[in-house]
Amino acid sequence: MLQKLLQTLCDSLSIPMPILNPEKSYCLSFSDTISVSLSDLHPGIAMQATMTACPRRRREDLFIFLMRANLLGQGTGGCRIGLSQNEKDLTLSLGLPYELNYSIFREKFEDFVNYLVYWKEEVTKFEQESKPMF
Image (cartoon, rainbow, N blue to C red; front, side, top):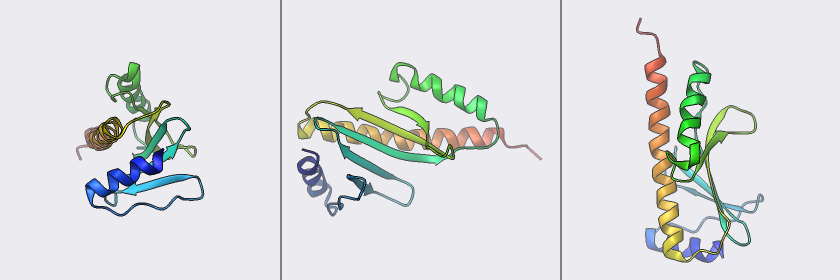
């Protein structure tokens, strides 16, 4: 299912179809900083992306800020902000464990990328606010 939906998406965006990697997922890169990994859930699709490196300063404050966004998916559009396994990067994930048609897939994918960009910017702003003035 994922391969068919992804092929249609790539055709509509005029980008090449990504190759299935050894982890059984496809990686769509839009820039040096925006890359989304898509996996087939049989049924459904999972999306995951690395947002940014996790700041070292004021981590507890940042985690509280991000967990409020995660609360009931209100600030993330149903996505989840978390940490990578090595706890060095912040990630954004979305699981859609049901059959999707193309229009729903495209809408969810666009929303995911928009939330990814938004939260990358928010974490950057948070970091800049926490830097010493002098």
